[in-house]
Image 1: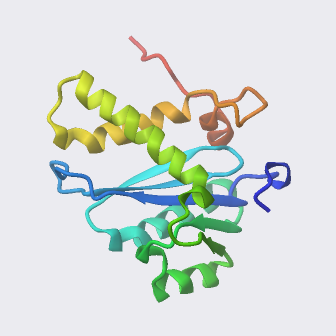
Image 2: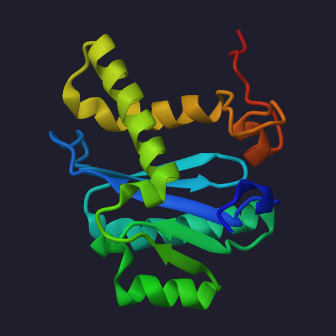
Length: 180
């Protein structure tokens, strides 16, 4: 089911990963960021976390908002073997929602390549922003959220229709200019 030709709609496959702990923590004490990448639109949703144990709470938020947005159900979740994805609460939530979740074999990040690559792209852009603007390193959280937004409004080879991830997710073009 991972073959792109089989993905015909949003939310059929979601890729997820957690990045961190990142030091220093943000000003509001966040240590991690969590991403969800839609396999069809390539749109990424990012959350900042204080603890890895918050993954379920934010996954529940992502599921509620994205399923309501599209009026579709998430079918598959691909994630690594991080302890945060292995709890009984997480498993039970997936069962209750009808989400099949696929865990990668331990120590094989290439099996979760979509999420791993997105984490790297976000991290590289965020690091460049913080460094380039000579910001305090504790602003990494804002930079991560900004990097995610920029990636969502940038073309990608993964989408052959020439549309942006933002366009496919929101069904409209992003507003790239501010009104005077």
